[in-house]
Image (cartoon, rainbow, N blue to C red; front, side):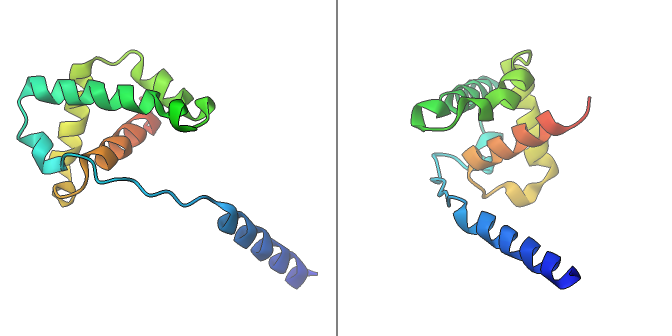
Length: 117
């Protein structure tokens, strides 16, 4: 019985994993290092544009309910706060410097919004 349960669990896991869509994220225009070299005004503009871009993802087929966490977390944040969170994360993790800024931004915002406050 135990082996059957283990086998069924494995089959279910493989089935779920195999049915997941693979996504490829384009590199984008900037790296995390580029972000640190931007002026404060440019960082705030980037942060605003990045969040606005994420909020447009339903136009490209993302389910609107997938954005609830982003809407609720960032609705009370200023562009300055978002820019500061992003800069702080990049400074604290220099391994991210050559990473695509669009991916780093998503990762940072997701982690920030999941953290208890």
